Image (tube, rainbow, N blue to C red; front, side, top):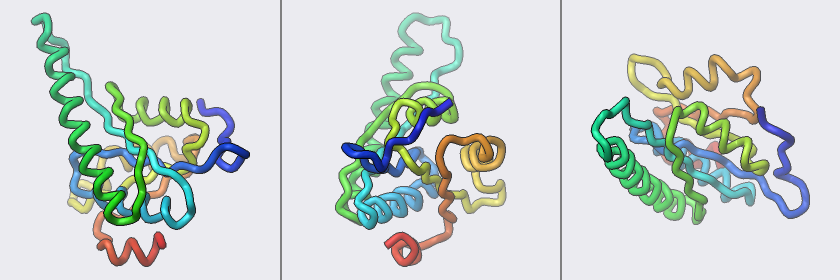
Length: 165
């Protein structure tokens, strides 16, 4: 798994990583991470993950589906970056990956030694905190390479500002 974090070594600085998806609580994670980034002088990286299509026998259909999904992911990242700029003056890096969400998160953490925190937001529905929070914070939390910050999805911008700076 992940190697040594280099966030505080010369020439490096810590990064807050946010997974940008289509869930409503994602905005809570973006707001918290951008405010913490600005407050601590860190940087921010946003990851959008595209699910690969199921097996398609028609040539080109799978590629077209991935291309459409990547375009949608780019739009989500643009919107999320606009929120980070507006709420905290932060210009985040943007990354799109294709594949399993948990695998894509771990791979990016492995590749970028400056990623210090993964910021997720918990869902507010009756189904629990959401699949990503459940799988990462619950199942692999003891072996995860960096701290996971879970922002309650019910917090307002003002409440997040009071907590994050």
